[in-house]
Length: 398
Ligand code: SF4
Image 1 (cartoon, rainbow, N blue to C red):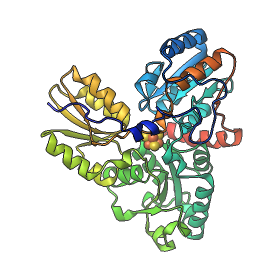
Image 2 (image 1 turned 180 degrees about the horizontal axis):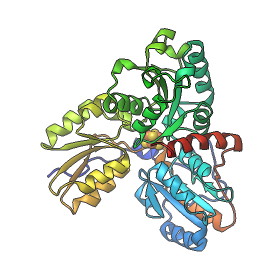
Image 3 (image 1 turned 90 degrees about the vertical axis):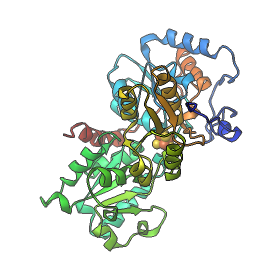
Image 4 (image 1 turned 45 degrees about the vertical axis):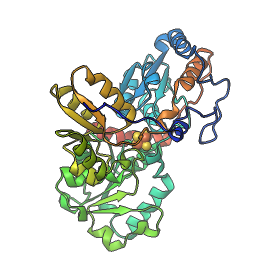
């Protein structure tokens, strides 16, 4: 039987994961006060004690991709949208400690009440995909679409994995947010939004910021062709597209991707099929189109977990999503005689997700015990208003 996971972090990966890092983040943010040393033998006890002192006043959210040492202290786990909703459903919690990345903490702040304070234990925990679409770049893109005469027939659809600014842009321009679970419904809704009453076939969608989720949903789930999709490159004049290309396209995909899921390749799929005869390949829709096309099953993290829960004993699975989650799933299902392996042979942690470690969690919790709210994430009122509008449109999707 193949070992569930035969990958070990390299020294470089350990450095990227922050195991060897000092308290200064990649963004130059310094933790005020004392960040405990990773070698402190009392970290687990300190986290437990601080959480107990805070009681119902604190609610700790743990994204599926977080390290085990952090997940152990999460009150709930889930994907970013589920966690934001969980936080909103706990109004008695004054502090929401979000163990995830920056855009997730922003979404939690948008969806929670005024009196709830959202804390991100390490401000360096960003998301490379979300950072690939800035407000200025997207405003410029809209100007390009306007000049090409297509802005008035284009509806923006933004993936949850985007900054609050991009969500607000989406809300202002009549668009919606989507997750990897409801992207198809969001696109169908968007194509039906033509203000002039023309048929859905004539509309366009500007999909931000993950080109792969947009393309996979349009082609795999909605029967569009690859030719219906164009990629807008914010680093090129006019997005690198002619006005005619924009007019001919149905899906205008932003040139963004996830630096974790984008690493899986067709080669990984072929290799695992050779190594493990009869294996089911199960991947996230943030993977490249050729990987998704070669896989047996495709779905969000919640879908991946449910698929493995429902899988029969004796089945074999190669999973293409973040390594922390795959490793936990491999351990969890080993007792049920389900073999779960990581799709790729190389280490594929999300380095920014891994910025949140036990020392940062302890520091954030102990600071709250001392009455100091550190690393608070606050979205300004104007941005919040329009970002919420886009999120509410998603909640109202049929
Ligand atoms: S896994 Fe990808 S999308 Fe998720 S936080 Fe990391 S870089 Fe962003």
